[in-house]
Image 1 (tube, one colour):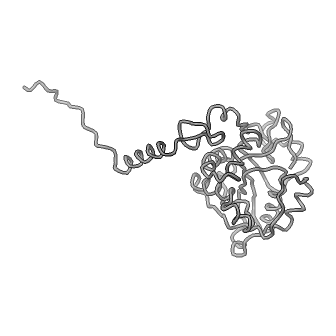
Image 2 (cartoon, one colour; image 1 turned 30 degrees about the vertical axis):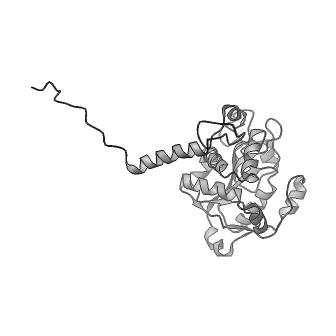
Image 3 (spheres, helix red, strand yellow; image 1 turned 180 degrees about the horizontal axis):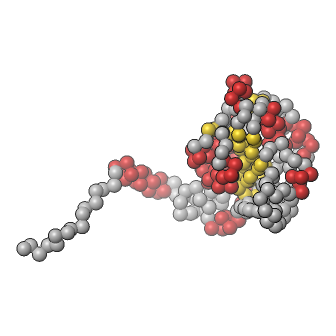
Length: 266
């Protein structure tokens, strides 16, 4: 008799080397680059996250929403409910969804990605977009980013819409058709233009790539951009995709402008 129990607790094997190296790398990254809020840059507990104050400031768009425009409705009118704006001026797309409103913190997030070269912001935005657009993505064939003209792409170094589709494709397994649409004419910046001026500005600016025209027919596409304001650019892209034979065109953005409590002009 040795006095030891016949059933000893088994010794668990150490975690795989790859997992230990990944954990060590993450700790080293946190030490070298402490995680900061993706909006205000104050310290937070993990990368690609918001601080409590900024999280409270994000105006996420949740149900009930207009089935076509994805804008908030004052009351839940049941499945398929349309807003007055969607009835009065039906859009070129089938459905649109956005993760949050383009105001305060939402604007800071979009601008951090678009103008601040903060690619890490796309990780968080794409996750919120997948959640907001789950109905659109469920049976989609591909994600299509709104393209930049090559001169603007050179000066900006990346297309924020393409970065969002890259992240979303990794999360959903959907095809990322980053070269399906081409911007063949450089346009003026849309900021400060009226809706009519914006529509005129982007007329004839987009084309489907020649080598993809046969592929697009009958496809269900999700057009992706960072923010939807008047919708002029989105409308121009959708008309080109529709003429090429796309069966369904939905729109998914990180943010959208919502004028007043529940109204929007597309």
